[in-house]
Figure 1 (cartoon, rainbow, N blue to C red):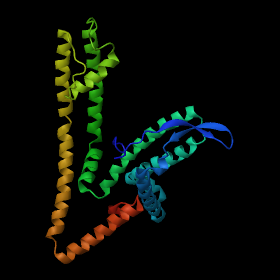
Figure 2 (figure 1 turned 90 degrees about the horizontal axis):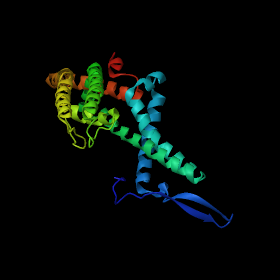
Figure 3 (figure 1 turned 45 degrees about the vertical axis):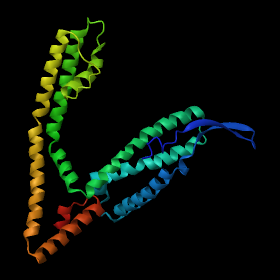
Figure 4 (figure 1 turned 60 degrees about the vertical axis):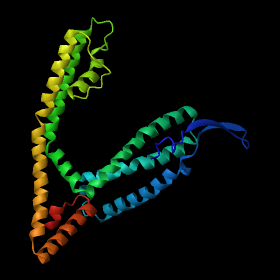
Length: 275
């Protein structure tokens, strides 16, 4: 919400004169520490940091803690806050040129905050199934990216040579055609770049057809993996529902304790805890 125009405060360098020392210096205004969004974020970060440190302290395996992808995401999600605070404090004594550079670095670092959305996967079965599907489909996704990469190079080169003699062509070089090839192969079609010659249009037709085939081939494997993990989770929930109440309560307690231990201990998985 802090990026909305009505809430955003553009920070600019301004010249401030210190009467006591009779010197002038460049500072950023307004201060980030008075921003209400920063105060809310600080409260959340304090709680997240406390939770992360507590999980690390009680984890039996410190190395296993850092091998857990969810713990890595938690660490990455809170680093931008501390980097922002340090950068803000350093800017008060930096020269103006370095302040501009620090502000640019700060904006890039703050983009990492979007990783916090992955914290929801701890409480969402759907996100967990999606993560398992992507992990099981890494080979297919790698092939998809590789085929797209080959197609982008091939068709961007072809459309460049087909349009090279056209004075009003959008394709001034092969790298300029990369964007057009990606947009065409993924069937997005923004229309900001398009061939005008007959040869270029033929290349565009082939590029679109190749893109559809390239994307369609690995998709069934990915969908099959998703169905496998989804039905496995559904069957597990159905088995628990069909159990006698006493046995189901006992199993839920054991699974809940194992899952809680997994989340608390980081690298200790639920399956290992059950054993």
